[in-house]
Amino acid sequence: MRRAALRTTHASPEAAAVVAGAVEPDNTDSMTTRVDGDAVVTTIEREATGGLHSSVDDYVVNLTVADRLVDAGRPAAGRDDATAADDADGTTADTPIDRTEPTDDQTDTTHDTHE
Image 1 (cartoon, rainbow, N blue to C red):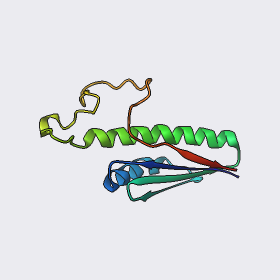
Image 2: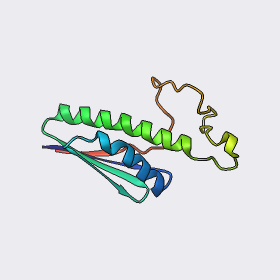
Image 3: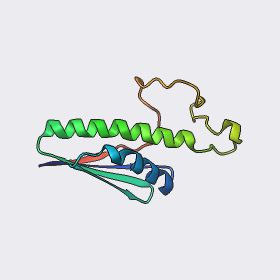
């Protein structure tokens, strides 16, 4: 059995709970997700290394999208409601996001792989 434990930190415990709630429905039977303070911890177990790699890749994509949406919905310090949807990079909620570029978010996607 191959196992990967992924721990990502988020802006607050509330943000972590929202992110975990967003990614958990996509979990397979080989995945568990929990919230630990401001972190989301997901463990993935698969028989083969290739399957583990695919599951981790899929999870990280889902996690990145969920975290970005949580960030987009959080008011930025010093902004009024009219500009609260502005991202840190200066785009607004109406600006298309180019998903082919790596995101510049603050999600810590470090993980440990155990064999």
